[in-house]
Length: 330
Length: 66
Image (cartoon, rainbow over all chains, first blue to last red; front, side):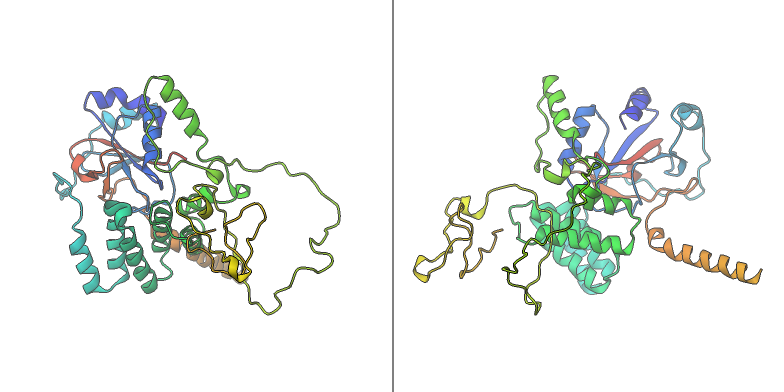
């Protein structure tokens, strides 16, 4: 994008071209930081749910005065001759321009979804709640997406967007203990519908294990902050700092180990769950925030009068055997 | 020859099944109007539509910072 920014700067200044970008990303502030770093001065719109249903990014399109696609991935060296200096025929029935776009009426959308009772109606409501209601209405968005998913469980878009909404709540003050895993589950369900959807795959990889990561997604953030600061500016504050898997580089070198595999419990001292009473699930969880024991006002669930003992000798106050696990604890 | 033709037909059928899910999304085509959309501006959160730029040439860039 920086190259196109440089190439078209003079054309934009002369009023010959509008540069408009849509960013496919969970966090808008990260894009704002990227734009500040690269000195982008054109409008950038946020589409965290892939509203358009693009198969991947980047996609660069040259649109004429009537909104008709005239070039896909235009060539930079002939851009002016091929597009700017050319006239294109107008269609007979060009759609009318929208003078002032407005935010959808969420109440009307809700009423319409209730009356129609269709997956499309609930998804449309949920989309609007995510885009225009933000985290304040994320629970309503989750409820609407859930209804859409119940009516159309194999709709990949709904599954992907449900994951986006869970991830939004995970990073909100209303965070629930299983939000992160729920996001991963729904993104995984979306990918099962269409394994070739590049944007869905990237969202999982953003938070996933480094083994499947093609490159570090947010290693540019620290460089950007340093260079912006060196320019004498204040970097855009990020609501959610990248961490863990988002910074990770793919692992490419593995040490070979031909030694025979050894059981971690050769004497069989660990009780086996032969009746399937226990179930384990694996999720990659970033280290962030305070543990329940470190939060102000935290009261240990351990009851010393009932012979319960803290699990882990170095961390008193975590959840204990014989007692209830804290609702929001790890 | 018949078996070869049958194999080609099977492959074509499988390929068409494999692309069905992707076909639901948007694939831009030269000569077709780009679907309109309204999304929030990342700075102002104000709604912006593609159609409000009608009458001007637009370079539309879909991208991500990752």
